[in-house]
Length: 314
Image (tube, rainbow, N blue to C red; front, side, top):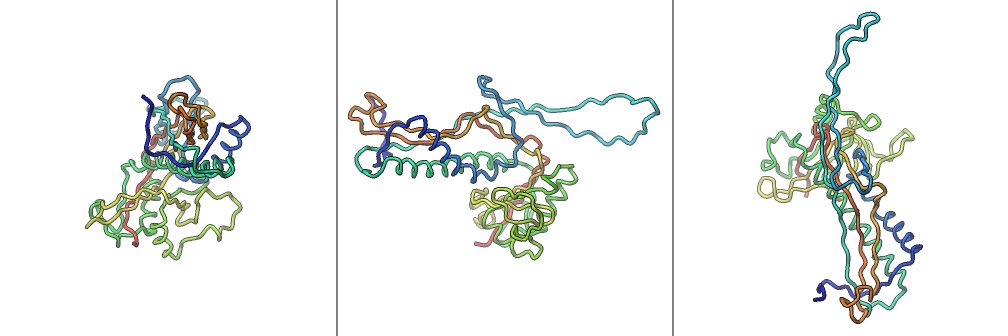
């Protein structure tokens, strides 16, 4: 029996030459990559093709301080480096739309271009959400306003520099390394709105140095580079009296790892009308979508990540 799907869009599509496939993939990446805010701070581990679905990463255990003096000419005993194996399973991600050949009579390339940008945006937000949800599992939590649980937070318990300073203190005490001298905080528009009330906030427009800024970076505060994304985690209705609770992730370097099959990038896949054989007996149905082969993310050094939970101005 032919596969049926009621979610069929009334547009047209066709097959792509290799050159056009490359062009549309490039356009997909142009839309895709600027939205990957959560992904950009991960330690990258590429997996060779044909090596299975599980990637073995290594969590390095920091060395203890050694205050013993060396004896002249004697290096002493060597120490054992400790590491813990952390595994992550690679998965495929993607989405597509079914389209008919009847409605859209405009230029074919324009149709595919619009769809490519649409799927590029959706695909980027999808992969970014996979990373975001993994980061949100970190167990080092600071509740704003002096509260002790998510359920106690109200909209008045806004993000302030106090919570950021506490996160910085926690990361320093755990010897978390910095990104070029700074930790990084990922915030949403609501929490950034409240944070702008702090007079010590330095917007990116006031930077004096020449270093490149991160995707989404909007400023600095107390040794933390602030990065904004519309895809920041929100725990809807989880606060007091059903208040929404925002999640702010503060990171040190090497907190998490991301992996993919070597060279894997998201791509546009277009199937022309008639390519489905007997499933499309009158050459009416085409499909356009995006796909990401072999991607995974895992917290490697959970002590290098802090989650701040707070309310925000409605």
